[in-house]
Image (cartoon, rainbow, N blue to C red):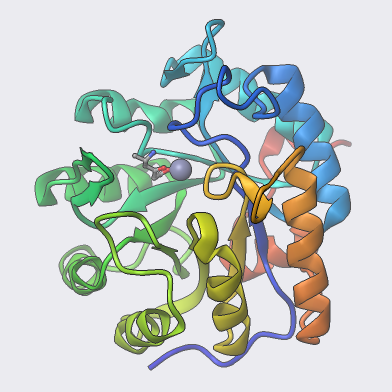
Length: 286
Ligand code: KMH
Ligand code: ZN
């Protein structure tokens, strides 16, 4: 069973990721200043949540807690966006370092529901690690977003909820990550199969299509009652031969699609209500 079609669209921007190098793509936001500027513009264009990976001074992916905390703080101070930190990191990050991401006190964290081939690499998510991360998110009161790269990950989510119960906040929000070489394809057929298999506890879901699959997945997601994730983590070309020059281009396009579907972009406040994420105490002004 899947949730009833919502009246608005939650747009998540994933601006950076861990795979693309700054050298290959100078428009990729990797510094704190670039990330903050990106967040501000993407919020104005209709994003309500940001999925963050951060980089070090050499623009390499890092999970350093102080840097993660600084990024969370900068986005919170300058926008109302829900701040979701990636616990996936890069394919080279050790599992124990990925658990420390929650020390940076994000609103939300990604939680990938299984191992998947990832191009020539392997994105490793063994079951015991999934269980540890999930229980840590419950303890730390961080709302997880379940990342589903394959139908087997959907099955693993059934198992997780049956074993450990509902997440903090009691909302089950999933994100279908489609079109990764090694995962499920970025097609409408695959999306429908995955959505039909979601656990009945699911309260909302979004989808993102990697690379050229971005539009097919976005159209299918809106048609099926899903939300949208877009950004340069997933898509570097706006159209064939046209590189993205700023994440805001992808958010603006997602917002246009959402408007066309008569499900306009949700505000961060509406998205917080959907996901049961209260504003962080540091952002509440007297
Ligand atoms: N960078 C990928 C290996 C997540 O953010 O949780 C994993 C990823 C998923 O991006
Ligand atoms: Zn990510």
